[in-house]
Length: 390
Length: 197
Image 1 (cartoon, each protein chain N blue to C red):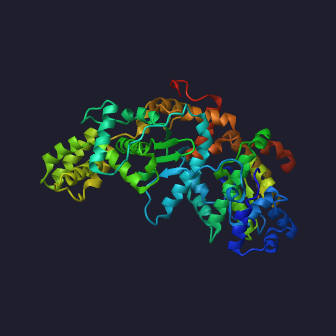
Image 2: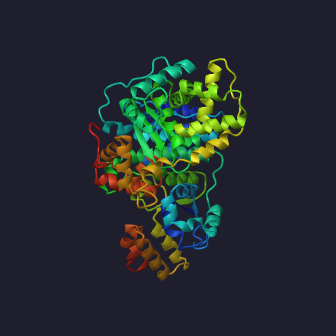
């Protein structure tokens, strides 16, 4: 391994653990003189002893060794943290691991010298969210009340240097359907989108992720999550729509309200929960009575979701097999999401010594799928119908 | 003495050597174990589930439940640190691995070595079982006990718990599903005195 022992880190760890040179040598099964030589910098342990040293000092190699390469900033993961939830912390750490694997791939992405646009001084207020959402709607050519489809937003992601990574992760709970990793050193944002989400969820997650991309300074914070959530709602069901529906159903019974919300949600291919939140936000912002807690809204959301296919079902409905092969997956998703990701992976894998295991870890997919994708990416440069400039 | 199998090695052997985990086929006090990663990997992969549908059968589920390594105390943290260190080492030796015809083991690949190293450091004598050549090279550099799946089968063969016709049939099936490691063919005559398919 390159790099020298990080003597100050080692000294701190030995002090923390109350270890002398002799005691450490005893733990490692080496002579005390060997440890002395290591700590004087006159000698460096062999890899196997380095591993034992790391274990004894409760450090990993990144901490144990200094490197001449600049220290890379930590990947930033956008994830709603729940206080005290261990699983969420593990998920954030796993996502950071994915970010570390993706670091070198940034060199294989299209020209990234232009800093992407970002919202100025973003704040989580109703007015601000409505204004920026309206601006984005206008930019993508949508009318004030038009339905937003994920296809409308795709161009925005590449414009903002965000790389969409389509994945098929199967059915997951809400927050497992999108993953947002920002790598500060390359200014690259990687957005994993689970194609096995139904259309209502998928539209929401695309809008939510776009909110993150527009607010890089808030990424990784709860405020950033609140902003992305609010932005998605404002984009998908803006104030003008909320106002009309609110006037129509205010002071009606819960059953009538929920039915009306369901009907509108179906028209807009969004969840009734998104509509309900938009109505309550509208009411709060205008000093009107909101609809409070509607007990049947979650059941309604489930029922509406069932009426739409998942994105993968829509994309691969002509597929001969239940699941697409690697070639079909790359060709179809590369075209649908205008993503340079597979070309970048292909070039990186050809240049590096990484194998299918790298793809498995980087995409969080099963090894059996990673092997097939790896074979395909090595044999090709991505799909044949690639896009100009990617 | 424990043998800790990675997911691929488990999927290769467990269908025909049933119950693979535990000590039914190994000379005492040796026993075979897996980590919880086997279940995680299998449960999230529809294609793995169709190729290895038997994994969900009750006797295999019960066998894994009884012989999945349970971690205590500091071990989960130690394993994560060792996994990270092993991956750093593997990555920094990418060119060497490439020149040997191997790919760099990924962090998840390195997990089985991290388990084995940590278990050994905690007093449980353990050997990794995997057919990943790159991982074998890393294990050798790090002096972490490591054998390939055919070596484990050889232990069973020497213990007279498995016969040559059984080994031949197993190799034939693995060959049929394109999952027979090259080392089985290359080392078959030396280990078992016969050429495997």
